Image (tube, rainbow, N blue to C red; front, side, top):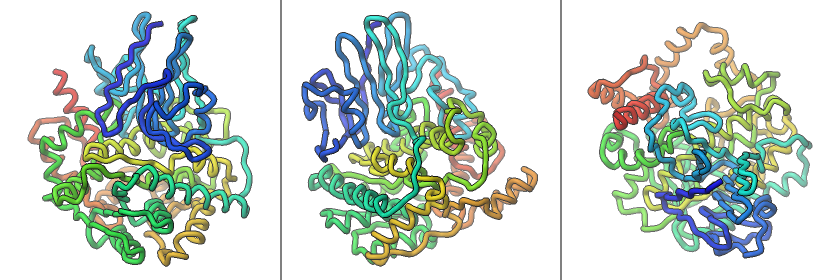
Length: 497
């Protein structure tokens, strides 16, 4: 089997090669050593063993005469794709649609805003999912995929004081890792009104990180913005607020957005737009230096338990009910909520949410994803469900060790909080006819609680733009991501005609 490497990543991070290892991203080993390039690895490194101790965001390709190993990290933050054609397998970070055979009718893409399982919009390209390794054996021509990191654990235990101590050690290590990685460059935290970004900012302040900044965007009177302001006021951190108005959203329809979006969907995800307008405003104000580091808090709520509910379910029925898609690639031999967690991580979170990091690189930033480091994930995957309902262990710990000592222990908005038991809102959604539910959602879509980032305004602007371009339009539901997915497919279709 011949190997064709197509490594043309367009972002701030760059591929490096040495000792038969291609590396992009960053990683820390169990002793805290930082790996920035292939040169940081020893020539004696046994990558199939060493990979299990690395914490970070990276992709690694190892090639020798016997085999090729291609690894994604826990959340595939640097996507890898492969295509088998005859006796050649192509490995790429940017799949090339050379035969122009594209699936423009992919319903998963318009419902969960990405493709599912190893599918892409390109018929002959497949993706290597989060925590997977592609193995190519030169002697036998065998090509197979294995999971080397799983988003679940079959062994569970209750939390105790030792669990709290491990949690604090991991979080404090984040600060040291971020400071070491930044190496004097400015660290920017996209600060929401929730808990995850607040925790990142809190531990950086606790550990006296230099050159620290935060930004928040949306509607000025929203609870998100009010909470963020209260946090930075107490912590005395440099903070910038960017109002999301019609004027800010105009840039979505310019060449600046088109250039970014063209190279950052990877034929598997809707390009992420939410931080785009904030970063553009900060750049235009001269606040972003040539090199800086962005550390977002997404999506710490998932491993810590926000998706878990205190009722029995089966993912084969639950996922279609909640997301409108038939689940693909489910792990059927584990606990149902663990199977759901594996599915949501290697699909919507990995491909759509984490793809936001491409925005940071577009504006000249490096980035880190501490909440997807394997030690943090493993800690929570091994907890019993009773400690994860309503994020009980997580919220108790962050308030006890970080928020209360720093006087930032106020709650986020109640409707923005996960609930283990079915809420009245969820009960009504299940009990009422779909048409009535949609009517209620439309009427409440523009409220500060439902739309703190003012995306319904951007929805209206994009809807009108699609009308002017005579593109296919859905029934109005004010779900911006859904409309954006349809718009992206329509623009791709026009590009290939």
